[in-house]
Length: 225
Image 1 (cartoon, rainbow, N blue to C red):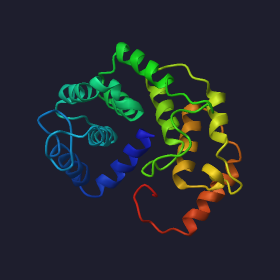
Image 2: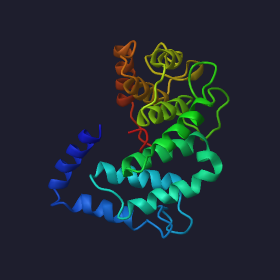
Image 3: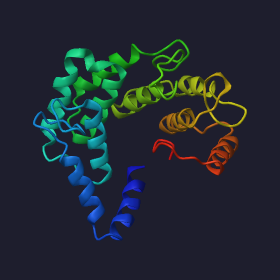
Image 4: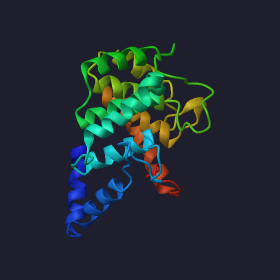
């Protein structure tokens, strides 16, 4: 996926004489603070989530932070005392440290133990009912857990997780809780199955659902794109 994004960016960037890539990198690096992390408002302390987006964006652009070790140390110092800050913290830490090349075996083992504590009775990870309003999908936690397990090279029960995801498949081909399909849940369902290396059931119906959403497009947030 990163290779495809990089190719598209190369094509886009070539039209503007390399200005686009350089301007984005400059914008991101201007938001790196003394503690090694990043924050859009450019005031201490840095944000773990902003640091994640900064490092992942730089990775897509084919580069790394100017001081990768300091960025890695920021995340570890910020999250170690709270046992990685829950699933979100584990996800951020695993993704960033893996991109920076600072994901040790000790960290992999610790992350695995923490992730498995979050497995729910339905076969997924994290809460899957009565979600907070700011959580876009009941599948987000499972996606993040599976992504971490893949990053750290851990074994996982692909069929069990896929069965959990399949519970959210609706008659219109989309995914979502209580029979209501959403773009977010459909995205996470597809992404999870791709990580698991499994084919999705009723792919044609899911493609039709996405095409219908595209036909009635009213873009309000970049996440919808």
